Length: 398
Image (cartoon, rainbow, N blue to C red; front, side):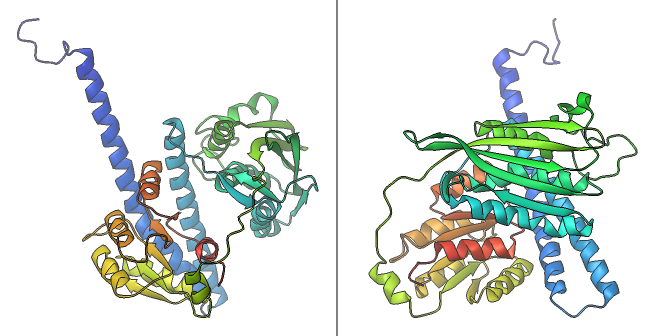
């Protein structure tokens, strides 16, 4: 139509380009929003945890406990939204690493004991002897699949208890693979037959509507099943109203290779065995520095602190460190650039550098791996996770 400048005659490539730009802007907005929320949330959760370690009156303890609970729920919703977005975009990466399977399952179940005890419920877990001690897979994603199932079992059970049972099935010795089978059963309210598939749909909850009695985005089960299928597994449910539910998870895992790593400690590791570990923390946020240094002290470590990337490079050049904790987004020199520069310094080609960042995206994790980071920790970092990572990465000769 002559004089029509509305864009109705735009070509298909133009429309595609516009869609790509919108997607990029949406991704950038989500990344900025995530970082903007996660950074202060790190301070709230960290400072609340520090308050728990101080003398508190019963009333003060109740207030701090409520603060920590609310912050934890906000973090859970933030993580769910980001994981759901990444899962839909096909960007959720899966890692392959050896881990102690029975130990990981027992530790996972034990985390939920306080929640069950607070409701007067029993929580039992039984691990079959057929489970191999060491498996190869993504322990973090396995936990992510199981967590909403166990959490919901406790949430929707008001008397009785919850049980987790795990075993290994479908062994294929020639291929070195097996299937992890986990059943989570409860004596809760049960799920109507017509809702047993509906609960896996995004933003749907069993008690939806204005009278909802539980918080959340309704994404936990959606992400759990999506992840299970992404890993080549499945989640199934059987339930009877008023009598409880059973969720069955199957996930393919591998057995470790027969060749053991027989390398001894290097001369450098052996020489370092007699002294405390030297850790460098590079973090521009003052609150985050206080929280992380306190966690390190709890684990018996002392750390030197640098308030930016440039200062971190200078510190590494002036002194040899055994491990470096590196923030990513910093105003002067960012963590990726600083890490690449430190890798060029003498003696730092193999030093473990751990990314500690509020950026949760898979794209950022890939960038960290490409820059030579040994591990990726998303803020807010739990003390247990931080100390376990350090213990795993520091020379075994220690």
